[in-house]
Image 1: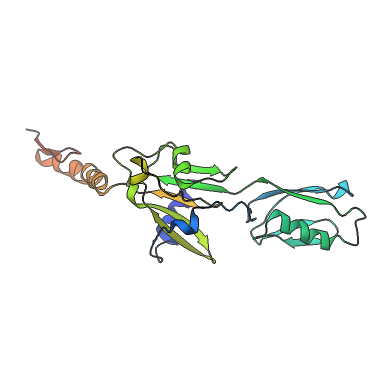
Image 2 (image 1 turned 180 degrees about the vertical axis):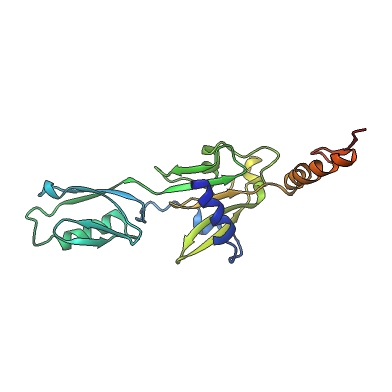
Length: 225
């Protein structure tokens, strides 16, 4: 299901925006002030009123629902900011004002394309795009186009994609890291040579044997008579 969703995203969600070249100064420092997004799970502890303790998943509308106060919109806030909002919301109900907000299940990142094990991966610590690829089984050798890896991100209510070149860092050069955010998609495309070979294998090789000629994935012609 996750792979099907990623396929739809890659075919539709990013088709209208031209990928941007990555600027290290914008993404080379991890954002340690985690901001909540729909799908994140948070644990709330009220030290003066344990009956109010709850574990909530941020809904698609950005809200969580708590006893006594109802819906609270927390999307885009840090846990510390949520604590401040809840402190005001429960000011009249609590004698002990201490509230703890902890993210227990942050949103995943997705890695797809020419990697060993495509799929979602949880971000339990600041993670770079290269680390995410390695966690997903690494690049497919001879297939991955490491110079044009895309990081696809939701920004300002629209999809934005960044082009990251891993060729130099894979050759041992020091490069600034690209730190990911929850729900980022890292897409490793296949090289044009691999795509051409796949086309030969899938279409030409299956059609030509009818007339006694074969073409293998390397483009070599063989006669079947």
